[in-house]
Length: 85
Image (cartoon, rainbow, N blue to C red):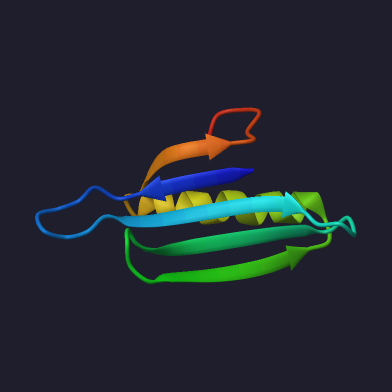
């Protein structure tokens, strides 16, 4: 699953983005990858590993919801069965 979000450009400010990717690894665990920064600038990232899908999905949804509350808008979503929330 993947979600790409960004903020609106305000004045001369460059839009910020936040991307969250959840994927299963080769050993059956789950990796949650987050990347954020300004468009065209430096990016920061963070990886978390989960043994169970439910815990990984919960962390994914929590990260997504926190960014939506901060004013990010979903620009692209892939791999979802239902609404984004």
